[in-house]
Amino acid sequence: MNTPTPHNSAKFGEIAKTVIMPGDPLRSKYIAENFLENAKLVNDVRGIQGYTGTYKGKKVTVMAHGMGNASCGIYTYELFNNYDVDTIIRVGSIGTTKEDVKIKDIVIAERAYTNTNYDNFYIENGENYISATKELVEKAEEVAKRLGLEYHTGDILCSDTYYTREDEVKKAKDHNLLGVEMESASIYLNARNANKKGLTICTVSNSLITGEETTSEERQLGFNNMIKLALEMI
Image (cartoon, rainbow, N blue to C red):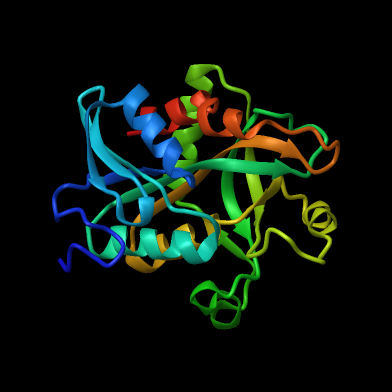
């Protein structure tokens, strides 16, 4: 394997077969310090912190992916193809576009509706949906039920833009989508192309309907249910 890469200083073997990926590097640090045992910093290129340790005796890596499909696509591609990672589970935030999906609820993203240009997806595939790994969706639901968590499984909108003139709330409503985020399409595409497994689990950070939102500190430190759900899937 061609490691390290320009974006990851870890040596081959220092990254586990399963990687939990938040967007924020500080959330990686938080997960490593509060959920893992014997966590070791294996990557800090560009401040994208990656830690490998154990959770209940199982080896796992927690590493950030940054914001948007472009950034997330680089890190997940290299993890799948250079570091031979089998499974990537994104733990992130999502803005909901549904009245019955509440702040701090969990969203299990079965499919990402997108028109992203990542991997020339829209042009090459002629489709708007890209699916998560079914096995991981079912496992996430099983664990969420066991933990007694409030969760919703369904389709989400994966956008390439945070600031946009497009009415993404209307698009989400027209397609019965649970919310909007910016990374799942690249994960699902990279997983499909590498014959690996990918899933996004999000905590609802804000409502694009009511305007209610969590603070940046809550987003960084307070999404423990989502983190535990992902780790319990290992």
